[in-house]
Length: 90
Image (cartoon, rainbow, N blue to C red; front, side):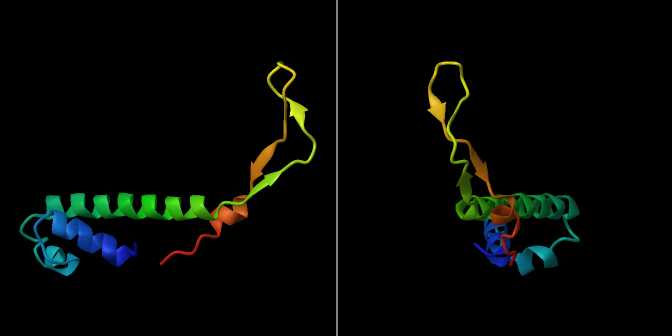
């Protein structure tokens, strides 16, 4: 979902047709406008985190190691940080 789609979704949840309609009404109820901005920020952050998680690349260390004392051997996995942090923004 794009940033604009998220803005419009928040506006509709508050009884407006589009985000621009909500912004035009902000002078009459600035507190609600600020809450709407916070909601947009949280939804946008969640959307981008989900996209980053989908793009995450996991690399495995080829040498299994005993990690839990049970004798079971595990390959260590590491998430490639760049695969997450290079997620493009709208």
